[in-house]
Length: 203
View 1 (cartoon, rainbow, N blue to C red):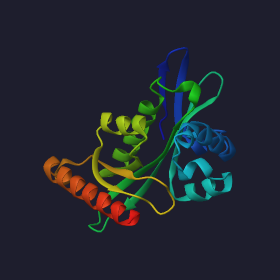
View 2: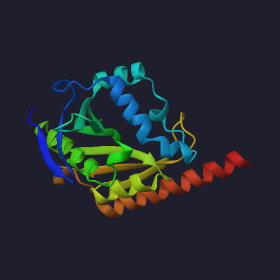
View 3: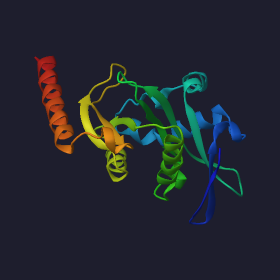
View 4: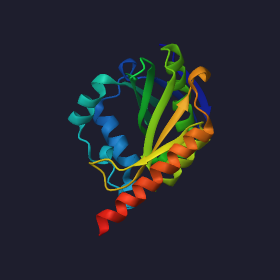
């Protein structure tokens, strides 16, 4: 696997797959907890914010983890994971999860550079689209997804969370790309269903 090297203010960033580094799951877990602390302060019970080191390592057995480090110091600054899956039509896609950036390195382009790494991985592995999700009230995360070519296509609430989530899709293969109008209509329908079911739960 080729690695990616970038210049960011005051440091040189290097991105590699986890096995190609000395980064431990304990370090990754600490980074994720620190990165998602602001979500806990918002009252959002993100699953990864309470995941243990063992839980994270077990979860990653089926995924590919990328890490971003300061090339000079080796300091861990960010991570993201992608899970390769196959849909009911036999098409390969990736699920993008656990994007986390150290609080000291936020707003420095680390997340975007991690995205470039997993995009290269997706193309090398013939993935036709990428899915992702985040809380509707995680405004910076929603903004990042939209800025990086994802489209909202559904709203739902997962059983182990206390918030609604946007589901996103980013097409890499134009031959399977759905019309933005269809995606938008599906999204609006899901919002109506979610709102209606939420109102029923309050009765």
